[in-house]
Length: 400
Image (cartoon, rainbow, N blue to C red; front, side):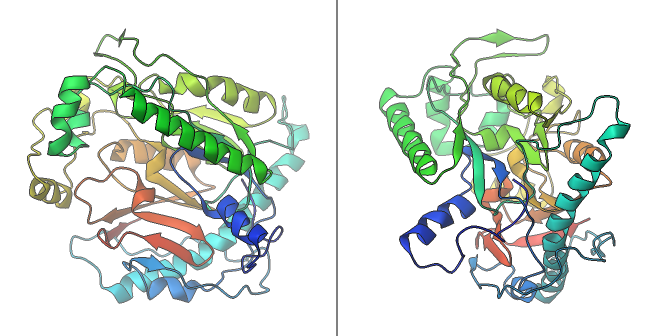
């Protein structure tokens, strides 16, 4: 999904085609993973100043005037000067300056990342087994026009067993449901509705000319056992949670829920197809998910408890081994943002940082969130100069 909005329907189009095209550009639900977008790269650093003045607002919806800046920037290689992490909340003005600088670099870095891939392709003759130049996987941000996507499926979905990591991510009013039905299928009428909604989304995408791939149906009720735990599965409805596309590379996330340990199996056929056509394929270190990965005494009896623990930087996952969900990362060219959450620990973030360096920069940001899990429900970069921000979860810390 590389590249930018230099081609396709204009962002300001008021026609029906323009409205439908907006869905192709901006819709990023958890049920789908952006695999390939229109290539070419976003141009310039459109309206970066709008971002800084609205950090923490409910919605940043100022439309950028598209400039005619160069496709590449001679400043792309400059390391951004980010403020150090601190416990006191920075002022809005400070955050504004930070995000303004970042936005300018991020749009430039998208184009630079595309150019970098083309440069690497030119050196294929130096490799013993060159990668095909026209990889079917190409994506550097969250807003470029869609060409190909993986959409999940809800068939055979099961309620995860009520283990400590599941308890930490659900509210008390639902605990009885998980205790009663953990390991069993979700109610049939709920699954039926979910399947119908996802199928309709697939139909809309296909009518817009987007190639849609689907994971394999699997019986998630089958119990499995490792030397460290036993569990049943959950579903393959959220490819965004388990797969991250960075350039022409597909990264399989290790995950943190025991019920999602084998979720990757539903996507292996698709990933092998992409790999055979030239995409890079990386699997992050698989955690043992032993008891040491979780704080077995994690105290969560109320929303107030959750707020206090999150403010103290305490989560149900420990630093015993790397773990992360792909959905805790959000991309903007060479700059990738991530949050420490209930399912993503600092070891997992550090693994990603080292794996992607020096071509990409990974930035850790925090929010006032009592139960952080998946950054795109809080902070979503949906276009040049356009950020969708949850007003109940303002950004209060930046650490780079």
